[in-house]
Length: 349
Ligand code: B12
Image 1 (cartoon, protein in one colour):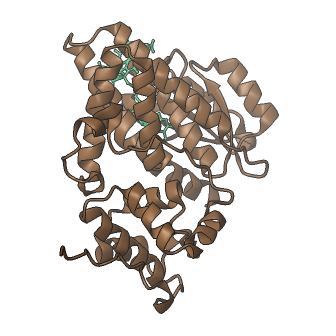
Image 2: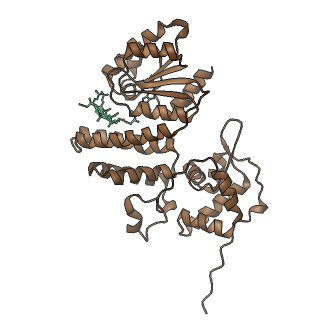
Image 3: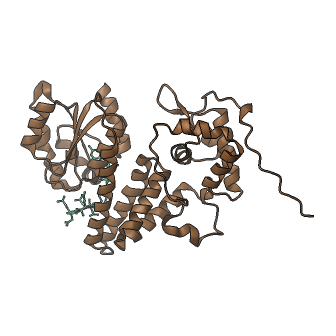
C-alpha cells in the first residue's frame, strides 16, 4: 500500500499573539518574504492586515509572521501563491471573515489567475520554478522586457494586461517607479539608437498616460488637504513625470489640481492669486523648458506674502543639475515618491 502524504495543517494561529509589534524589516528578516511581496499579499489578497504605528509605518503581529511563514513554505513546496491562500482559507475558514474585514475599503485590482507570468507565459512554463520563488527583481525585469516587446508590436491589449498585472501585485508607487519609469527610459534609449521608431515611443507614452490619468481621476481628492498646483514648465510636452507626481501627491492626501503640459505664465499667476495654493510644482525634461522656469520663479516671488512654495524637478535636472541654480525655487532632483515626503516635510515646517 502506498504511504499517504501527511495532511497539510493550517498554522496554529491561536497560539500566536496578534499584538502589532514588528515593523516590515523585522518581518522580512524572520520570514524571508520581500517587503513588496508582503504589501502585495496585503493589498491583493487581504491576507494580512497590519496596523499602523504612530509614524504611519506598518506593524505586524506574531500571528501575521506565522501566516507569512506558512504561505512561504507552501509556495516553496510548489503551490502558486493563489493556491496557497485558497488552501489556507479552506483549512482555516475563520480567516475568510478576517479577510473581508481587511478588504473593507481597500481598492483591489483582481488580475488573471497567473499574475506572475505576463502574456500567458505561465502556460508555456508548467514545469518552471514556482512563481513566487522568483525574486521581484527578476519578475519586474521580465515584465519590462515583455512590455517593450508589446509596445514595439503596437499590441495595446497585451501591454495593458502586463501593466494591470503589475498593479495587481505591487503598490501603485512601486509599479510606476520600478517598472514604468525604467521601461520608458529604455524605450527612449532604443529610440535614440534607432532601434524603435518614434511611433512606438508615442504609442507607449499614450498608453502610460492613459493609465496614469485613470488612476489619478479614480483617486479620491482630499477636500481639506493643502492645495498643490502641478504641471509642466512652459513649452514642456513631457508630462508623464508631472502626472506621476500629481498622482502620488493625491494619494498622499494633498488636494491636487493637475494643470497639464506647458503652463502659460500669466494665467498660472492669476490662478495662484485666485486659488492660493500652498505650493506650485512644475516638471521639465529639457534644458530650454527648464530655463523658462526662471521667469516662473521670479513672477511667483513677486507675489510677496501670497507667494506659494515653488518646487521643480524632472529629467532636465537629473542630466544637468546646474540648471537649477538660477531658478528661484526648490529643485527636488529625486523620484516622485521621495519628492512627496520632502514636499510634505517642507510644507509642515
Ligand atoms: C515619453 C517620452 C516622450 C513623449 C512624451 C509624451 C508625454 N505625453 O509626456 C514624446 C514622444 C511626446 C516625446 C517627445 C520628445 N522628446 Co522625449 N522622451 C520620452 C521618454 C522616453 C520618457 C520620459 C518619461 O515620460 N518618463 C516617465 C516619467 C514618469 O519619468 P520622469 O520624467 O523621469 O519623472 C520622474 C522624476 O523625474 C520625477 N519628476 C518628474 N517631474 C518632476 C517634477 C517635480 C516638481 C518633482 C519633485 C519630481 C519630478 O518624478 C517622476 C517619477 O519619479 C524620455 C527618455 C527617458 N530617458 O526617460 C525621452 C526624452 C525625455 N525625450 C527627449 C527628447 C529629445 C524629445 C523630443 C525633443 C524629441 C523630438 N526630436 O521631437 C520631443 C520633445 C517634446 C517637447 N517639445 O517637449 C530626450 C530629452 C533630452 C534632453 N534632456 O533634452 C529624452 C531624455 C530622450 C533621449 N534619450 O534623448 N518624448
